[in-house]
Image (cartoon, rainbow, N blue to C red; front, side):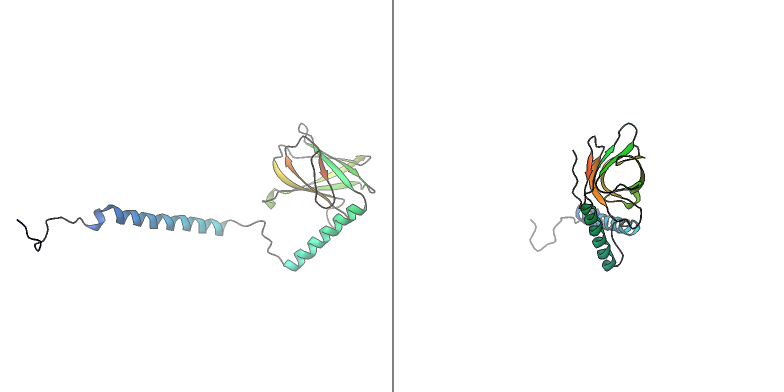
Length: 179
């Protein structure tokens, strides 16, 4: 008979042969690897849409944009944009008190500024402007038309998700509608 004061014959295995220490070490290593991967990705990839300029100048630029849209409202300007799915022609019908010889259409991608595109549309007749557009345009885009590339008097803006079968209305002040 064994007495309680005598050492038991239960054999203790060393720590490196047990499950729980290795499980806890693997959790720690996994968290270090994942956090290091995210740290490297955040350092190497640029935040293209973050404005790193003087905020005062950026605020003044926003006021100029509002002034351009107000000027378009004063000129009673509006436009309808259509993108032909077969020929990729961009057709804009401009209505209002002015019709310049050329229009500049900016397609602005919301999240990647490297995908932005500018097209020059030529006046063909009675407020109709045409240019060759991109093939297979997809996703959501912000649209801007203005009479010159730099320092224009007015601007019409809108938004569309392509491919779009209907015409897209470009209005002063940013409200757009598909018809």
